[in-house]
Amino acid sequence: MSNLERDPQATLCGAEADADGPARELLTGREVVLGGPRGMKVTRTLPGRGRRMVGAWCFADNYGPEPATMRVPPHPHTGLQTVSWLLEGEVLHRDSLGSEQMVRPGQLNLMTAGRAISHSEESAPDVLLHGVQLWVALPDSARDTAPSFEHHPVLPVLSLPGVAVTVFVGELGGLRSPATVHTPLVGAEAALTAGARAELPLRPGFEYAVMVLSGAVEVNADRPVNPDATADADGAAEPNGAPEGGSASDADGVLLEPGPLLYLGCGRSALTLRAREASRLLLLGGEPFEEEIVMWWNFVGRSHEEIVRFRKEWSEGSAFGTVEGFDGPPLPAPALPTTHLKPRGRHR
Image (tube, rainbow, N blue to C red; front, side):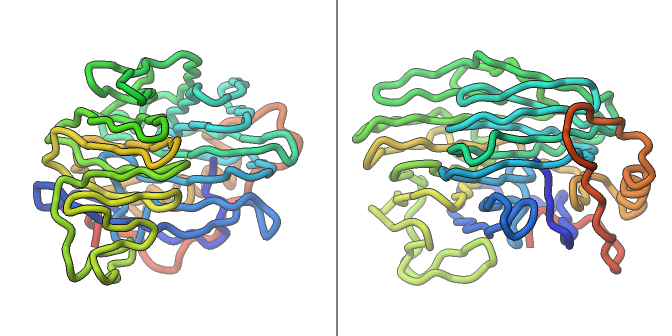
């Protein structure tokens, strides 16, 4: 999926590390309409105004469940990987390498942009769609690699009482996804039956975030709730220790419902989940990404000059190849901001 905003803001991320240790920070996200006023609505929790990355994860759109039509024209990417994960529906991917692949629930489409790629995505009209679109920032050692595409119809599943955890990227609990990654990373979906309680194994050196995709899950954040305030994605305080979109359920936990992304920080060896009803939860994590990056529109680069070059190459029709089979013109690049793009810290 593309960033289809006509006036995308510069997203500046980098090596201003958090203090080591657990955290509890709710990122409420914002609504974005893809493809104009009648386009598909998504909730974008990464990048946020206060926190822009979780490990190398730098972009998260959550959409549905609702009848919708996804129609994203050919558009470019550099310096990142796109991760398509569906709960309902199916989406057709085409790219400039000649790939044409339908992705369905429980399957993974992974596209590595490397130095340059273009692709399109579309669904049948008005089908029930529910899923997430994620981006992973590539480290400097891999960002100029040749572009590639992978489809993985079968993925490892960690089975716990009442819980099935599909590891679609990276490693969790000794299981490893076949998907190619370039930094230590994990992306997993936990499907919980009503009343199920599970403890997921974590790496203390990773930072983590969770998002409930359906149902309601009590997340043990391994840290007492602040009785005075907690911070939302914009840095604003929420009263009474209960962040917007969730509620304080006991001294250590948060009842999380669909919508926000709960950032958990580093320093954890386990995470306890308790499902109030049948639920599905997304877990993202990875080693804190230590490189400074500039993310603008559909590009991840390292400087203003690189972003200008990427935009010019796309507008001139060079470098990114051609997507065959999509019925329509490619997506035009928006105007560059008037300010100079400068890499900054990963969060305010």
